Image (cartoon, rainbow, N blue to C red; front, side):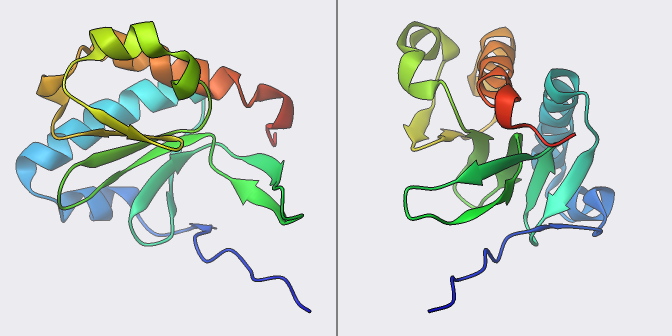
Length: 140
């Protein structure tokens, strides 16, 4: 049986065109988040699929045996909130999350309505911690 291929992949679509299509306030928040993620990874923003902006990549092997590459960190402006992909460390960051401000979490995701709702310094710490958690699997 063939393994299903991951649909969301890094591509050559324009990050700037994607952000320009967002409402002004959302685009402004996204550009600020991009700065934080670029600083944490040392990588430039790339589109992953049609609606995720990602930075860097790492190789993974899931419990199912599926292997592939995924972004070190990234974000997506969704209708209800900004989804930030901070793939490691959120479960061990209770104290930082308490200081962050208005947010919710999912497995490997941090959800915020707008950047003004959170402490940007704490957000930066969370992004850096997440990237460092993937360093040993990073693709260079």
